[in-house]
Length: 268
Image (cartoon, rainbow, N blue to C red):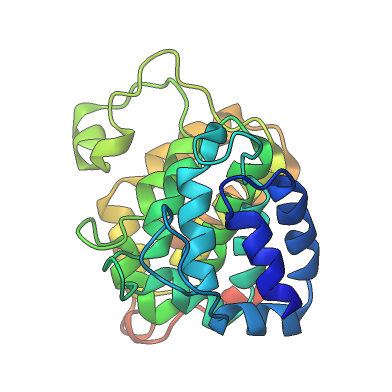
């Protein structure tokens, strides 16, 4: 099977064309048919990666273990982030990243979300897109926002945070990961990635639980300070839209009926 061969060329620790093959795979996963095959592909276990024969499990773990050429001296595996973004264009891909795997009982999204501020643009860009895409799964918003489960919110917010200081009552309610970031803290410089993260916040605002949680976690002050510092029109519009959803009064209807704004965003 040619797709299994491609995965093998990525995961073999001595492969000299692993990164080139990651780029090839990231082009192939633009096709829905390839994503569907990859979602269930079994390739046999590879020692040193994980105790799973599933291709996606191996690709996720080699992406984490292989950063900075730690697994293969010839590869950084950054383009696998684009593969993950493509996979999460589909509900089956989003469910994969949001559900615990059989071999290590971890959610794959929790392994890759830590790269949302990574220096490599390809790696963090694909991760940002993946984080945004999983937020389309409305029935998973509780798990996504639960600090004891996925805990995705801090990794969406961190790239949007700057060096600003907040009032104590605001800061203490924020996720611990975004408190006391210091005067050296810099925001995401790429406006497309800032927009992607703001879209994730908007998607979390499409459920009543999501809006309530974002209010409790004091997301508004972070958006307020971001708005002051941002000069990108798309980002400003997305920011204002999220603020409107967070600051509005909830009625009996809005606590039951979901906001149907998710259709305005695209999986990327």
